[in-house]
Image (tube, rainbow, N blue to C red):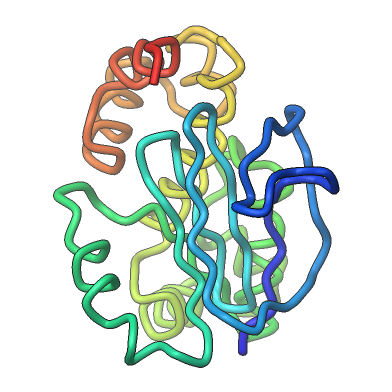
Length: 200
């Protein structure tokens, strides 16, 4: 059963798990006997396991499977077919690759090349490129883009402008940020931000 580290209602919330969380609320690593479905009506949250991090804006959910995975197969099938790209950011097991991704986690906007990351990690650019594909199932640029989108979602939720968010998260201009955000999230940053203020 995977360990999870994620946002969850603090003590005193309702039995159904409903409750208002303060911005930045964090719960440490813990376990659940059953799978856990988490949904935010506003804002967003992240769920982290040993397999990676999933970020869910207000119109999505995260599902952490448990012991009765097969019994919930129908539910999973329904949840697993959204039109948007997944916001899952897989995490590596290889020490060299983890060194590289840790540097990016610490500073998502850094423009370090894969070759430069390789020198810091003690691996060639070719080796790191192969590891990104083999362990994470995506290219270095794709992984970094999703990492930056995770941070962009936080900035937009906090009310920062699209331009400020683009610059803070490593894009050289707002247009390229808007294109990347739309491709991953399924809507423009402006539409996403506008939806945060819509009553639910």
